[in-house]
Length: 373
Image (cartoon, rainbow, N blue to C red; front, side, top):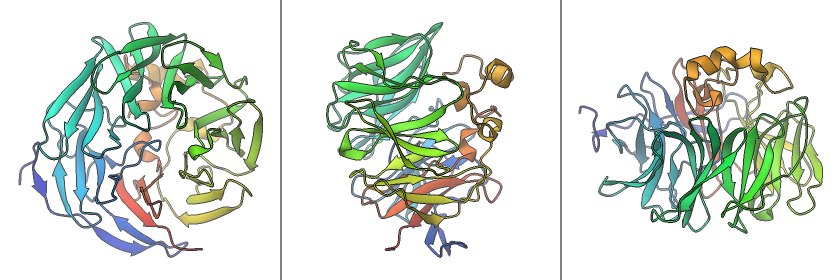
């Protein structure tokens, strides 16, 4: 069947055992194009784990697809027309709709009818990935509007939207899981970790550090309310939300990180060297291997232990030509291209791990089954 919004295509599912751990691995896509799951800060799985979403360029542009039922169901195209921001999709907590970005607008698509609705538009802006509060009432996204950097925040019903400015590039804004009045975000480059109230007040830096401390991929440590982050490439760390006191969880080469809901385990990939995906015990720091990624993990900056300087990314900025961040541009060789990174995340029951790998020559979507240790 030709591609198009609502088109159904045969399953591309196959299975194998991981060469290192023996874990069952489901390969969910096989089309010779770029295919990847949602960004590591979001789960690709629907709330009931019945299926999952992924982004594919098989039509020639970035569009949203689903596999349902997991793992061997048909593939259905959910969006068409103007391409979406490839790392922007987020599933609403109710599971009935998926949010995504096109240019300066946030859209949602109904899973059942595939009807699309534009929630908000900031003309002339470029928005980043969507993030929702636990109730699905509020949405935030990083934003770049002409010379302005910052984030946007507002209600999912399209009301009460505002632009909160910041003097540097903003990436990865996230609502506090216990107090969604607060949004944590990364200022890029150093210092990274900041917070601001949903109404734009209370802006402050949570941890001051220089370019020599490569803090990346910060997120909330489940429902503990604290933050977890990587000091690349040497340590996985925790920051107390209230005291701002940092502590080391593990001296380990953690890269992209995703905690479970309890905050007791942190899923990560690794790079330089890539030893695969791991689960790290947040209490003891002990790592447990999950599977190999076999991804190419491109990006020259990951060979270093500092942020990129002007000379590192001048060419990438030129290629980006107005994109939100050089880290999200497929032509970038400083921090990406992002689709060559595994970006692992949990299923909702936390018994499966979805990730991307270009081991076959094209990025594909995989899911590893976590077996009882």
